[in-house]
Image (tube, protein in one colour):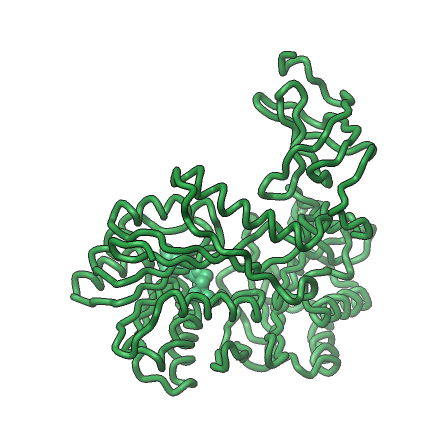
Length: 459
Ligand code: SAH
């Protein structure tokens, strides 16, 4: 059958063959693939066609003829519709197996080898209610200010009260604010008319201390009437709130946060602990969303690094300094760099708070600072990298290799860019030794991993 023969609303009965890395079922009709939400491998479904493209299409389940024994049947389907938990319909054991396979497959596909040791995934103990951060969009629905999450690939808000994967106290804060804002008739921002004030509610809750930071993302500095009263009520009700801020975003893009923050209550940071070190975290700074799993991730990274007391270490993409600071008292010197100035301020302060005198932080991009440090003659024994999803820059990799470290430890939140960078590191003589996936994001398709590269040898 030719692909042009498929039409919207056609109905087929088919078996689900596979799962995409984002959790959609894959169905093939005469070898033409369709991607189907809420469909698991092994299930037989009656599917109707939603959309047909050149080389693939999208379908929807009309009816299950048989269901997978790994299906979690009691899941609220809004968690799939929004992508809050796009793997939530799959049992946790299977989620973890799938994530492992995904790392193995992408290394084979991209790096052309299947002999890379990928260790079994470090599973999470807490598989729901684990997130320490939420960014919740706000919209008017039928005249009522409503909090929830966008339907996937849209800006249509689906109301949600229990966000399933985040700490329940974060949900409670969001609901409290929603109800208080309803009482004062506050208007949420409307993307079409560009009217209204409140765009998003961002909540962070430190895992070990319970301290909370609330950021209201709004269109202007001017507080609508009675908002101050709402803040008073909020901090009275939740006494662990240590910071309330406005973030001004008057733009039309899809970025959540604007540049400017205004402090309304408390301090402009909250404090948490990781691996028994103290950290101040400010609103613009990155902080791993699953603290106990991030602690396991870091410990694996130190273990892979095989740190020695005389080591000079680089912590590239250092954020608020967590990776370097947790190990600084085990090595001679830590250098860190990070592009967000507020995060670097936090890192410097955090080094002081933990009474460390052997750390050095600079603001700037890793791809600029690494060649600069190379030319300044900095000679690290171990380099840690923890880049965002886009992975590393080629110039960074070359500079890192020219520094001639004993080992490079790579923390990645994106196996695809990681696999690409494996090829580049191996070309520079840094051979992949082992890979340890760590599940920081249960119920979702995201996977984190830590890997080590040794100079000219494996093992
Ligand atoms: N290691 C930290 C942060 C990791 S997240 C932790 O574990 O918490 C990645 C960090 O890289 C973020 O803080 C982000 O602001 C920073 N970043 C993004 N692009 C960068 C670049 N080109 N150069 C340096 N830092 C960058």
